[in-house]
Image (cartoon, rainbow, N blue to C red; front, side, top):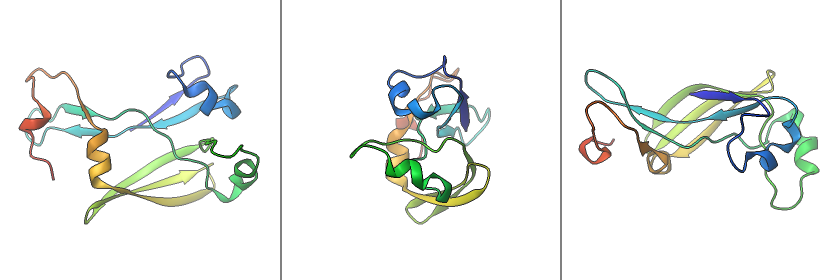
Length: 130
């Protein structure tokens, strides 16, 4: 899923990371896990994350960052998700003019998930992970 935050709706620590977009909106992604049986409710959610600058039209901004500094693509839109062996492959758009693939280790994605309160009070330990 995606959340678009305004300048006054930033998570703690984001203001410095998204300083280049301080007067606009920033795009954040997060993973979620659904129960595999009814009621198919959300049982886990990851923290918000963003796609680091890597687009062709963002190269200039990547060059002006200080060593070790990261910045997010100003416009990013995750459009697809596929499981390939032990990887989760995320397809996404950059700045409304490019697309790319982001392979992530399945174990890293699962480790990002945190249980959410559910009517069934299910625990991640009770779910069969892939």
